[in-house]
Length: 245
Image 1 (cartoon, rainbow, N blue to C red):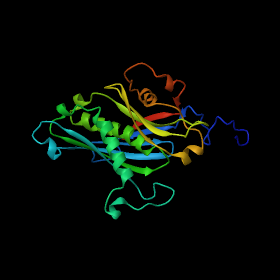
Image 2: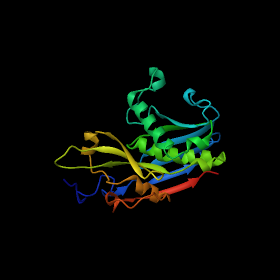
Image 3: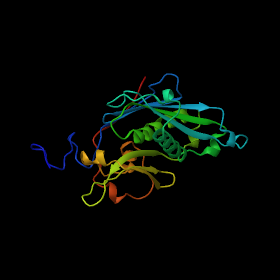
Image 4: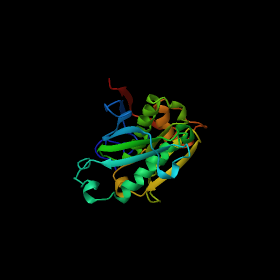
């Protein structure tokens, strides 16, 4: 179905199915954090901060290995309706726990923990405004904040790859729509996928068919391996990266 003169291949915001959202990143937005990045993808905005600590989890003590972990939270009015802070509820929800683990695993995959020494890098991802794709924006912005913190601490040698994420959809008249998070690590040239069914969101419009290779390319981060056929024709609407002085 088309509305007015808009062809059915154009989404509500004017993008074609293969267009990514406009993306902006601002580095160094926090005064005290070792690394920080505010990423905006369309109307989704996430503030990411990386902290370098001199302690490791109990199971790594005395082993000479480091750790990278992440925390994820959302402001009460990041969404259309206010949601209670999870600190008020006394425990984090299942969705938050799942996203935190996903971000942490994604970032650990591009860091040589053995070279890191007994240090822990904690990446905090706070959603300022949510309009879909918050976990993907958190992974991408979290990586930038992580890299900034490691380079500032003279630990850039521990970075062994780059990672970015993007939400993709496969709309089909015959099969149930699927929304998934696809990540690509330049270190291993492998993909890991965390899928969640979102039929309602998918029914509102077409979703870009793309992979994180487009993110890496747009950000000047060449991924290893040959080009994937599934990403051909997908392009970012706009990419802008700035550094706060």
